[in-house]
Image 1 (cartoon, one colour):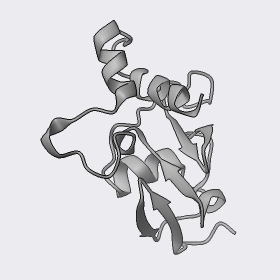
Image 2 (cartoon, rainbow, N blue to C red; image 1 turned 180 degrees about the vertical axis):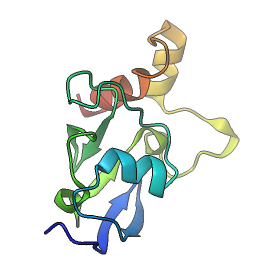
Image 3 (cartoon, one colour; image 1 turned 90 degrees about the vertical axis):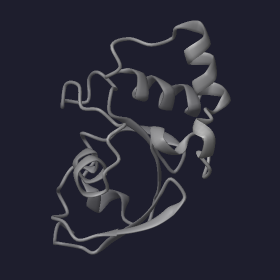
Image 4 (tube, rainbow, N blue to C red; image 1 turned 60 degrees about the horizontal axis):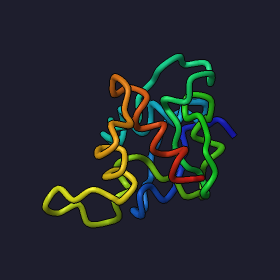
Length: 120
């Protein structure tokens, strides 16, 4: 199950197919192969949560998940929480609340915090 794919998943509402080694981290696929750089790497050990995304609605540390495990699943990243239309720079209500209340750190942890709050 760790071949070169193809691996098909739904990322932020869009169907995606990648041909990468099956053990490639979801984090790396999102950032390097799909250009979704909102998800950040903090510790790389699943301890900090900076790389959190939602898989089928559940929070996961994308640094610990090989792409072969999300084949056929739905992935939501911080880029997708405002919905399919990001025209005009609109933020989701959750992103707006973080902005209004100063609910951020240095910026590396914020995407993961948004995703965990979204799941909550």
